[in-house]
Image (cartoon, rainbow, N blue to C red; front, top):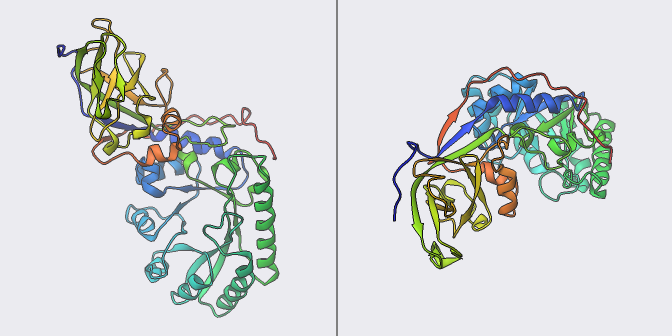
Amino acid sequence: MTEPSGTAGTQPTLLIDPSAVTANVRTIGAATTGEVMAVVKAEGFGHGTVAVAHASLAGGATRFGVTNLEEAFALRDAGFTERILSWLNPLDADFATAAERDIEIAVPGLAHLDVVRAAPGLRVHLQLDTGMARDGASPEEWVAMCREARSAEEAGVLSVVGVMGHLACADRPGDPANEAGRDRFAWGLRTAQELGLTPTDHHLAATAATLSDPLTHHTMSRIGAGLVGINEARNVALRPALTLTAPLVQVRRIAAGTSVGYGHSWTAPRDTRLGLLGLGYADGLPRLASNRAQVMVRGRRYPVVGRISMDMTIVDLGPEDGAVRQGDLATVFGPGDAGEPTAAEWAGWAETLEHEIVTGLGPRLHRTTLPLAAAPATDPDPIQIGTR
């Protein structure tokens, strides 16, 4: 039996708070004497590139980082004049336009160096693999790449303005891989300088390393997930910038023993009421969180039951009459201020990272961005940063 409606509902909505981004940049900036590069890739970690970029500058970031040139050009098209570094481009990327639009390019190996030499005027950051076997030149290739880069500088076709690396285990500050990564980066920087290069930007740390290990800071830190409140090291509290809500499309009563959803993965142990939310894995809710996750309605948490499907999620509202009604708004996740679930909790229920939760939210969600308010200056005293 379907129950009558209560509060008027709305569509599933993602509320974005850019003031949280500003506050996070200030918090992170208090932890380092170097510059903060705001990494606004992947649509600003799902929060909106332009909104996150403006909020980052308001917090003290001085430049931007992105993956590909399309993201860099979008920032220029939006009117941003700050320095931009792009670090993940194929060999046939439009490096000539990058030079024209003053986009800096990461060079991860000799093949890329040969290509970018054909786009005179580029400023480049030589990228060293510091222990991830992912992007960046291997130590075996590094010396030759530095020599070739110096030759290209002398020929006047490019300028080496930076040396960069990345750490594999920065979220675990005591992991020996971090010391090995720091040592390799120091070697790479020293080698570049000994071969005649004079890069002014030296950057190894992302969010977790910036907030846990001052030895990684150098002249700049690249902050991406930290902009939107994610710190995998969990040693400094940052503020989440997203709240996801959805109305209860339907509330119905079921009898004990009724099985719910695809595969009947949950069966009601008692008479109860179910609430139906009109969003599912097509909107970014991870299916693995089925029968694990919770949402909040009217100040109380309720469990997700049955399998999360493409468009629907079912919540067990309990047997009591009238506590929650059709049309009431459920908070799927938010900052946690009122006890609502957070994206970090959803990540735990889905056995994944917060990054995947916030960047995987689908286009059907209605997005609302709050005005950028002045964030209070962050007191650096509570920040605790260990060395290793």
